[in-house]
Image (cartoon, rainbow, N blue to C red):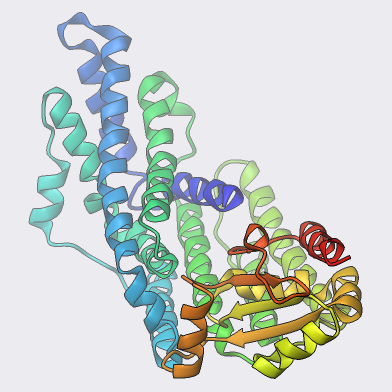
Length: 399
């Protein structure tokens, strides 16, 4: 989650380089400069206005995140449907085409003018920050809507709040510092075709999110291969196919670096699939299987799993394919998987109640006597080395 939030923060800062946000920079600096010189309060007053500005951004976007996450239970259930997953991916691709310049998202002029008005006082600064998203919506709207869909699938109001609060900090921080040091504004790169390149970069982010949503309905390693192809296409397009230019020297390095990063990431994904060894051998849940494990004096690991659950797939593709985990599981454990991808199965619903499973992933550890070790229960992704520690813990306790 830390790396995810850092990526979202960086995405928020990158949104400042899109064509719709960039023209707001001189407006924002001019507004803050006026607040700084009013009544001779100087830079201290400017600092307070800058914080109010960022707070306005954060409050508006964080409320959006919480509202989206509150639909998480409904979204989580909906994500069990192949049709819904395809529709969500199609919506993300639709907004991506806007960022690629195939169509424009435009708001009524009256809304844009109302949001762009200058208001006095700290409340005015707060309002200006809260309405920045309205002015910038033609560029950041598709990206934020894609992020809303992802947050809704997580189902946690706290995550929704934190994700959009982080996005708001990334979006507002560059404008805040530009306002504080407005004298350096002349050193900024001039607007031009390079901003269209940044917009296309955001479009590829949405394409990647669409691939993420439908990867669960693809067989085997199809989802990973699809993500690799998206990364490869994005790298080639952003690095070399796109002909956008800029008047500052660092831009060719930025393009080339982005292209190379996409190709390296694609190569890593394909290499991980090609080099992946055999995984854990799972058995379907059955009372007879549990009784057999007790007779053999073997502990049992029960994995409650769903293909639409990202941590579930990460466990399956990483932890449960690690050679040491596979070897220890085959030697000393009975491994049971309960696939609850499609709801409505009365038998599986009863198992969820029996083991008090609130969501997936949930991994239950039963000792050799068939009693659960509650202290070992796992409800999130865990790297192989830490998972082995849990296996060794319960394996030692049987002796």
